[in-house]
Amino acid sequence: MARKSRKDAIIEAAAELFAEKGYHATTVRDIADVAGVLSGSLYAHIETKEDLYLEIVRRAAQDFTEAVQPVVESSDAPDAKLGRMISGHLAVMEESRAWARVYLEDYYPLSQLTRNEARRLRREYERLWDKVLQDGLDQGLFHVEDQSFARLFILSALNGVIRWHRPEGRLTLAEMAQDFLVLILRVLGADSPSKQAKMP
Image 1 (cartoon, rainbow, N blue to C red):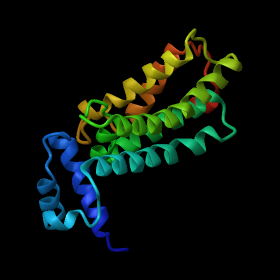
Image 2 (tube, one colour):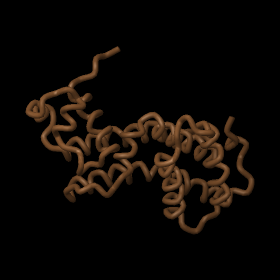
Image 3 (tube, rainbow, N blue to C red):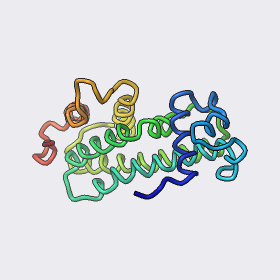
């Protein structure tokens, strides 16, 4: 297995601390201590704390996109795609809880430039969901008046999982994804889901 680089260790430490303590409360010294480097040498790998934040958001955005984009590009029916996208989204949050929490939060005290870049990355990911929802509307599978609101509802529900779900809880990831799919399809007015939409 490839050895983790010093920069990767610093980024991972920052993700854990931002998720646990918050961006503002985390100091550069905190990050250096967890990463096992001297505070002064931290700047050989990063320029600012905001750079660390953006790198976390970029990597998390990549994880979410890689989990969902192949599904969007598949030939499955939109409702079946939605089920697989829900599973993929939840899996990323479960596997990278700290990274996902930092990616999803939008209240950190950041410069406007950094905030805009983080929002751009999130919006690119949201467009994948928009496409599947629009395809479902075009094919008569979904029946909602406002596609953007439907996407906001779906992702808000899924993202909220990171605050309350615990791996040792009564629901497995697969069970939770199935329950979400059933509820979301009802919200979308999918009265007769395709056979593909039934998750194993």
